[in-house]
Picture 1 (cartoon, protein in one colour):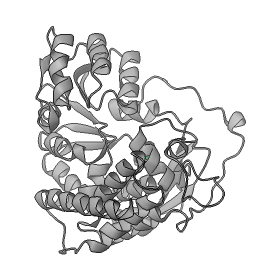
Picture 2: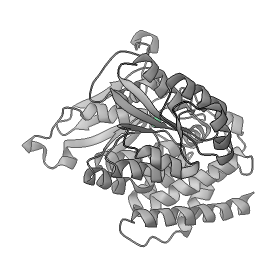
Picture 3: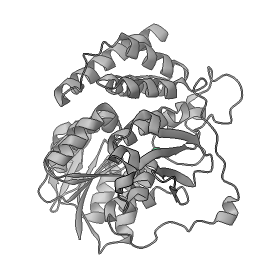
Length: 393
Ligand code: MG
């Protein structure tokens, strides 16, 4: 029996994780549930799963939660403080982090320092300081298991494989990874993207997800983030990550090994599978998703991404190559720009402009920044990106 805490329990990953836990009651005990501000959602989940710990990020909603959830549940402080306490609580074995954006930074650090197994869906902290988090995990004997479908696919493909002597060093053992992308809302869109609406950008062709990530999929920034996350998770160089547009979303990514063999992981596009795998790892258990029907899929196709039409992908690649604090600047400026776009303040194509101008204004100090420095870079980049948004709106 694994004791699990879900940070971001009312979002699409959190809801799916609870669906998995519901199907496998003998495997999981849900001990902690944290959400942003969805009072009704969290109250319902707490009623169903009777967690020991609950937390709402929003202080006002958190105060109201006390009248809705009583019994044995302890109410943790609102804001990051409650998330940090839940992530490092001694009664928790597995922490599923499905928070949105940079807010997951401190809870991830707390979970790793407490030696937890982290099922990681919140990719932004791994973009901001992935190498530093990996080092921290090693130091505290914590584990990071990716939940996002693509890094999960790669993680699944490398299980049980070890470099032989002839493979050379560890980085040569994985020759390349194929990081697949659905292409987002505008893969088939003809003409300029200058005037596309928020509603159009929120229509993802294959996955149903939260707003931030769906917009990131439409700009392909999400794929740029995933490339950085994968570099950090598997100690790869950016050149070793080949991004492939694969609109069917059946192959979730693959690995080319030193001997030229390519293994890929396939399944219907259903997030419950990678969530379940991260929760049950290293075991494979029952099937929760529909089986894959290859005859219904028919064809699998692959295309190169268009870096000019989707400049966020080029910016993410540049940030990955520069390294240091630049990925944190990329992440912060994107978060600000996406918020402004969703609020109708800037255009879709301004998202890349905001990121580019913020990146240009950043003067890297060289070397890998400490966690404290990353937080400072993040705050600086948010302020700078706000300024750029003002210029554009
Ligand atoms: Mg993904």
